[in-house]
Length: 353
Image (cartoon, rainbow, N blue to C red; front, side, top):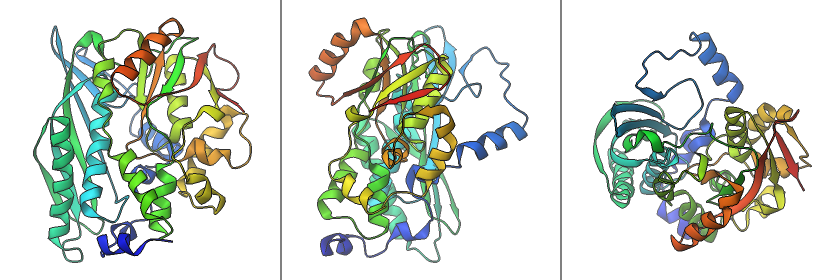
């Protein structure tokens, strides 16, 4: 049960102000596709827009000079935790991650704030911003400004700008058959966030939730300098399965995913056994199950759990896997090998049990 200490930390429960939480409140993949198609489809005419709306990458990239491109991303969501400072930290880390996922360096951010000022004290919103500033400081950037509105739902996020060399951009369409797949954070953030919302989480597991979701994916900036890394994205609201499918489809490949090798936050199995996980887990499964083979029983929860500020999913050439693992070790970066890309088959992802 929720510890008394955790209750005392957050007397105002931000998570009770929304149905979904964190990246779990994303619009369902099928509905999003319907919206975008109805808006007129995808066209891109500016040759300087190196990465735009033609794919499903983490950010847009615009070339401003022969050796310089600007990265821009925006990400915001409803509260994933009750504590406003922690909410701001997680939202900031999640938004900045998109810059790292493109192999770039973040340079500054602007805040996006929606707040029910007549029902939730403005001082709570101030704590959210303080949390975001703390993460921006860790990332070495300024929170330069932003925009706010008074509305019925608390929402927070960032628009982040970054820079990258035009020849060093990492996208999700560069994967090659035979590439090994690596993940830099364990899964289970959505499960723990749901346990918090239902007041079932323990204090130690809350610490794990914060430790995982507030950890910056700064290693992505380093990997942008290495052509041995063929493709990269971060794992967020569509779960590891959904974001792997996006990478595979962009690269015109299939993948084998080794279920026993998937890193999970210690202790989440107990919550899953109690059917404590986000409702949007099923939404993800309904969207991606036709493209998947080999999933058994409740394993779908681990595969489709919406992550908020999840890890980087990285495709590395098989011949360079030892170099990659050595580099991660030298940088103090945790990493797990979770599968490989293969030639395209009938299904997009094959689960290896």
